[in-house]
Every structure is written in C-alpha cells, then in structure tokens.
Amino acid sequence: MDMVKIPRKDLDNTDFISFRQTTEKIAGFIKNRLEKHLSTVAPLFSPQNLLGTYVKGSAKQEVQGSDKAFAKLQQQYAAICTHPFELQKELSVPIEAISPRLRCTPYRYELPLGADGQKKTTVTSPTRHILSYESECSLNRLEAIVAGTESRRVEDMKRSLISHLCMTIILEQLPGLKTLLGDLRYRVETYPMKHLGGLPVVILSLPIQTFLPPDSFIIEITQLSGIPAFQEIIDFGSIETMDDPLKEAIEVFLQQ
Image 1: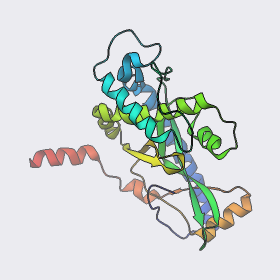
Image 2: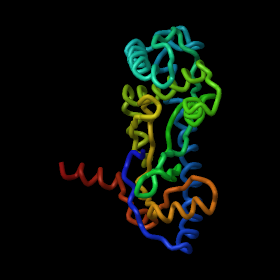
Image 3: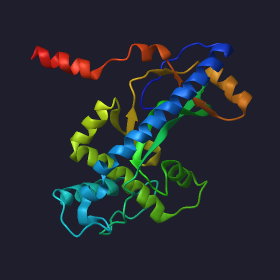
Image 4: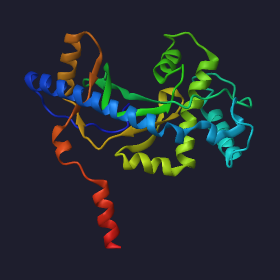
C-alpha cells in the first residue's frame, strides 16, 4: 500500500488527457533533474567510505566508524533476509563490491480499487523516487523474484538487499548528506517495503502535491487501456504556491 494518503479529485476525460500529458512532461523533467543531482553528489555516497575494508576492492586502510557501520548492516540484513528471501543471516567478510553509482527509480505501489478492493492497479508517483546504489538486481527485479515470475538467484538478491541497506545506513551516519539533499528540495524518508520483508528503502520526494481521480474513473481508464497501471496526477496549483525553504530558514534565524 502507499506510504501516504493521496487526495482524490473528480476529472472529466478532457481534463484527464490534458493533465496527464502535462504530468508526464513534468515527471520527465523531475527525473532528469534528479539524475543530474545524483551524478554530481555520488562521490559523497561512496559505500567504500562507509564500510572500508569490509568491502572487496577497497583500499587497504581502515575507515573510521566502519566497524559500527558493518555491525549495523549485519544486524539489519539478518532481520529481513529470512522471509521472503530465504537467505542465510550471516554476511561473509569482505562483502562483494557495491557500485558507487546512484540510481533513482520512480516509486510504485499497488492500489486496491472498488468497494471490495478486488480490482488492483499499479500506481506510479511522478514526484517520488527510490534512491539506491546501482545493482544488477533492481527493486523491480527483486519483486519479480519474490513473486516467482523470475528465476531465483541468491547472490543477486543478497546484493540488492545490501545496496538498499547501505543507503539507509550512510544517510544515518552522515546526516550532512540528508541536509544537502534537503537543500536541493528533496524530502528524504526511509520506508519499509512490507512485501519485501520490511526492507527499508530511501525515498526522495519533492514538495509538489499530486492527486488521483475516483476509483471508478481509474477502473474505466485501465479497462480501456488493458493495462492495470496508472500515474498520480500533479496538482499544478501546488507548484505556484511552493514554499521557499531558504527564505523560511532565514526568517527563523532572524527571529532568534
């Protein structure tokens, strides 16, 4: 289920077509902007700088706090690796190298429709993205393995879990990274994916409101398209009234 309650608004077909086209344009702009930001700050997120010699291929030098970071990684990994992944709890040292490249994936969730909730569709957010290290086993692929629609590969699942856990840990241990992302207008949240054993993922969201039409409208659209998928629609009025965090910070500072 979704991490927040999305407002509902009535739409007619003409408005929907116009809003959807504009939403897709803005969504593309947001993702392109985010990818450029992540490419620039990626060196600051280096997992080797967090785990040091606990990672294969790292320079043979100790990193301050790496013992604590690895202990936390081991603890969190052991807590989620059993169900539904059926992986061994103990991590071998050093762990396989983690890609320093950052990846952003649009946040998706399953939405029950109708009074009985029997009909379901996958909804994509245009303003929220999952932040992780690049991995051969993306979150979508991990979900497919758990669902049984893709062959089970133990090492791929293991790397995927570790990459997401490392992202949550580095943001906890280096709070300046979260502040930096906040200054770029991204809200940083950690959200447990219940269908993946509670795997915590980092979600970046922008202060732009979205909404969904009523269930009946979504059902009609998905039946016409033949694809059980929908996208949240951007509330364009919220863009015009966006707050300025820098202005607010200065005002608070002056009041001290």
